[in-house]
Length: 444
Image (cartoon, rainbow, N blue to C red; front, side, top):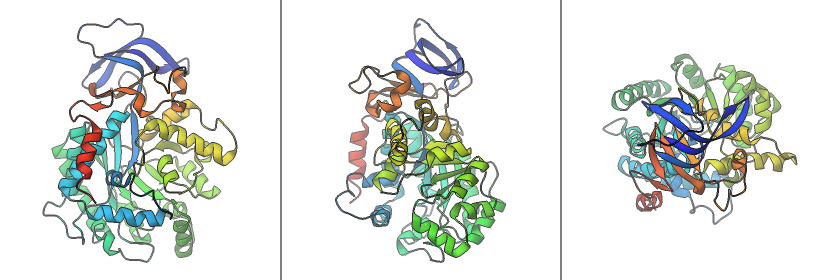
């Protein structure tokens, strides 16, 4: 496999090397040669080659809402009611079709892996499907069809708010108890392991939020969740969540997780928008990953999270597309930096290299499947090639593409050594726009 240029590490810093050849065996990079001539049978990638991006936070069905929820005023809570209406329409069949299209859109944009924060488990009203993992298996099949690595985050959702039962709209998200969820989670993990290749589909766990999981059930999760599972949680996305948590428990959401021993290097805290300085210190000292979703946080008027402060405190910053107002790793990178600039009045809060790390190996800590954090021998061969001569990138230094490139400039995507997308078209599935148009016909 050859490319016109590739990014790598040389002398401790980023470098662009010309005419790089990657020898790949069993989906991993076996040898890297700079200044190489193409050989018969090579796949030629034209452009600047980067590690493929990783999407550390996704709700695939939220793609239904793009372009349909922007014509009125309101806030996160108004948007949430619209989201519930879309969730109520999902079936395993329609969700598989929709998720296949959404994952295909991710792939052509440059993503090779995704952490899917999944809570639509049961039928409307809460009754399990005859196949208890019907929705989860639909998502796994969709990922396999799109060729994207999937970390399926099976989510615990027991309450509609602190001290509040699930609403009728939330019944299909919930389980009878934390023990029922733990049993279902382990059953799902076993079924996925038997049915799908582990390098492509893995299972992790998620807690919806401290609003959605009562205090006593957090304790059970801390005691019983397998130690090798990634754990994600929506954290302090809204001030109302913090206020309710302080009133009920006397601590912030981060403080509540710390109380139960849930703050650690395996935790991915999603959003973390409204944090106190003490919260920042807790997450940093724990070495947690903080998954920022800048385009979603802007679209929902959530606010600007303290990304720079979290990174300086010791947290790892990762990026996700969440509700998919846009699916574009390059836009997420620069929107993270632009938020920091707007909040601080300073430029250069994150270097281009830090933004690239957030979009690649920063997200690796969130995943149960391998991703390519760097172009290195032994790494999985997950790549995206970017056109250096587009109207957006022309004249840009390759190292500064986070401030000029978009997904439209991605010419090729390779996952496990196989070209899966080229010039905006999925090799197996075709045009994502067509797939999405057909899938979205199923929803009002």
